[in-house]
Length: 371
Ligand SMILES: CSC[C@H]1O[C@H](OP(=O)(O)O)[C@H](O)[C@@H]1O
Image (cartoon, rainbow, N blue to C red; front, side):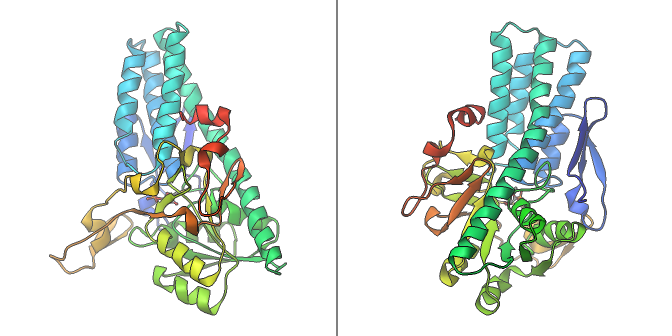
């Protein structure tokens, strides 16, 4: 059983796994309020689009419950200000914004129904806690839909065996509340006896693949092979693949998808080698307010993160001092290179060169996402 990314309870509060220390150390750190939540997300001690949204929401829930106990007034105004603050930690993963907007609606509904301060604090905390269960359920649904899609594509290509699948970054239990999105599809294939091998890219410069995905594959006994990002093309050329499946930080109205830097090159390689390329994401990752991938804000991380290797939280500089650095944390894959977008509500139907995401988001889910 993989380490859990977080532990939350009303009495015990919130603890998160410090992912900067994985796999050498498995250290849980306490998140006592919204400031702590913002800091662990900004530092990438906690990362992964769904997980960073949940940790932000739950860190604020811990603080809200403390204020309820102390009978502090001004609940709605305080929660609005704290949610706005939490939105400033990282700009690309839309899950953070969708989650804060959905929780903001919970607060506004409580105010509109005449709830007092204590009730408003508790309404917020109840909704934040419920997101944990919903996330794992969504990931299991993504797992089934993704595994069905990959096996159907293999059958159409005349292959009935187990799947050889490549993935980038970490999209497993350490990027979510459990099971994972793209890595959740690999877990489902394995559970069905249909995973021949998972090839995980080390995912420079943060090494989510080498440190986190490799850790999850080994811990859960999935057949995994680690490769350098630069080896992906040669592996497709020499060994053959049945699919690539990746996560997402934001999928916009036409299906263009932002994900970890290196994903776009994987999509181009997949197209060149005739490998189906899938994006796996819960509905909280969809953003129909943006029409095209060029509108997605791309986070740039500190130069030091590219120039150094961090082991157990300690940085060792590798790059020559004084060199200029460009360090975008994400890139955007155009919908035309994506074979399918796998969600917890099934696959988004593909048009000739893109997807109609807005038509897909069911009315009820659209409301939850604040769209
Ligand atoms: C479950 S999708 C997680 C998504 O987030 C990762 O980015 P980061 O590690 O910088 O938070 C990566 O893009 C993954 O695909």
